[in-house]
Length: 269
Image (cartoon, rainbow, N blue to C red; front, side, top):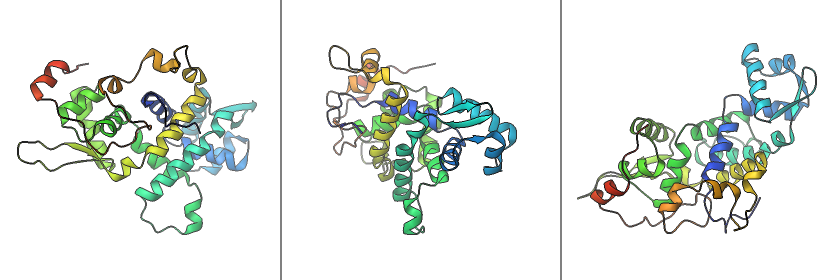
């Protein structure tokens, strides 16, 4: 894993790409089943995962081939690609995060050491969805934010924003502060969301392996992806955290609402 201490910007796009590739349902189960048993035919996968329908499994392996997670070394046989094998580190990080922050604590020490597909899929499901990673990133960088400022930082339309905020609350990743005199309620990260930093690091590393051209340094020392399109939230923030999505304990000074409205007009789609 690379040292992220001196990373110039948090790679929100890399994390988003990795989640989009790994979070579709049954992806983790399929990867770990083939990892355990070796190359498998579609009928063998269906036998190992009987709760997944035959037609659904055929679509899953096709999608995973397109995502470069599976290969067909011979007709009708599926195996992991090198990228598919690189998911192990991501799965371990997600499993550990789920066990520490979301599990009921009833598993035995031996069970806790094993990476189980179901907790990994549940954890990825909490990070899935348009706007999830940008919203969590904005709160990690700026601390508690009211709805308007958070929506602008994440770059979401109003309807998408409110839906995603509701989902993040259900998934125990954000909560709302209690309003005080002269201040409205704000969104803030939960302890579970603040514990995602090692997961983000593994997801970003996986995305770099999936798209190595995006992490090649250009002549100025920045990554190619950053040179194309840096994170908007980082451009707006004069002081960015030195760690990937690390939590900033002290929130940034507030900008008056009328100035925010002028400098960050509402976005529509």
